[in-house]
Length: 427
Ligand code: UD1
Ligand code: UDP
Image (tube, rainbow, N blue to C red; front, side, top):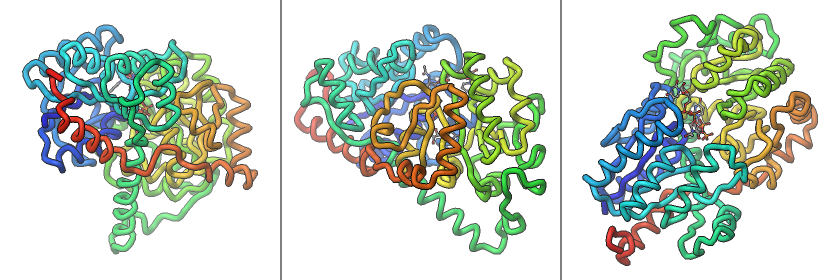
């Protein structure tokens, strides 16, 4: 069977790893199409290297631009490739522009589309991701949904239940497998006499001897420091800086990149002001390139960078990032993937949004939607720090996203369908 995959951003790469591994393991032909939406080493290549993924057969190289232009370029490129390769099925993942472009083009060529992580709904049509995921669900033939709730969302929209498969989320596959690998690396390093961390002791947030005070471990010492932006220095290996950060107490892992937060000066300022008030935490903030740019443009970067307990670093490779999350007291984020990973890793999360297409995390008690409300963000983080029973309740929330076998289940379903002759251009 010939299976094509379109992906283009960091979360799609991570969440398709188990599916790609399974395709290769079962001996199917894989056509991997990278749209090139994410192109910085830290946002794309480092994941291919670290997660041992095959080099994409095609990279359309769309780069950054407006939604229409970017999606249009993707569609043109994907169409050309699909006409040449004529795969039996095209898989897309999630809700990025690649999902919209891939699903639309393939469905018009009558190539069956499998949507991995289908059925999520925020019911906020101002989000580009909501438009993308809804449109892709109109074009799909196979709906690989993470939860019963996503299945119900699709049923309400008239999708036949026989086309909906509850597999769990592939992020759990990625999380379980790679956290084990990351921990083993650390154990090996600690057992070796050349451990780079042996001379460093743990520190408290406000300690004057903190190994992470400004100008020691911050990759981004200053927004204009050209060395800090050197993409050739890999961040996927376990560097001293990361290992030292992992030794800190009361870590908050912070990420954000949603347009509605980072492109809006008022909201971004409110969030940054909240972060600045969280003095009892060590805040580790691997900055998405979009966020770095807007923080600089709004003049917010320097103020945050100068705080001793805030560690602004480059986007991390997956192994480092999993370790960081797993050592955190709280995850503060507007990321979709992090809401899922937080509950998978038993870490309470505060989501910097007023709605979520991952309501299961809130229903289970592991996630609070704090929006961009400064007081609510500060109050919630402090409650998790100071109220043990509250922390316990949040961190013990059950994981609604499956058992880490989503990739296998997806391939079982596709193979079964192919054998029945349904997974063909002429079916
Ligand atoms: C995209 C997805 C979003 C996903 C996120 C994952 C869409 C509509 N958005 O958002 O759903 O959650 O990826 O991270 O598909 N940039 C760089 N280097 C890069 C990539 C981007 O500097 O390698 C900068 C550019 O200035 C660009 C900006 O980031 O204009 C935004 O990038 P873009 O890919 O348009 O959107 P994301 O915010 O990354
Ligand atoms: N991630 C990572 N390094 C980082 C930040 C995030 O490996 O520095 C991973 C994270 O574990 C998750 C994915 O990237 O699997 C989430 O990507 P992002 O937040 O960019 O997108 P979203 O999930 O919101 O679409």
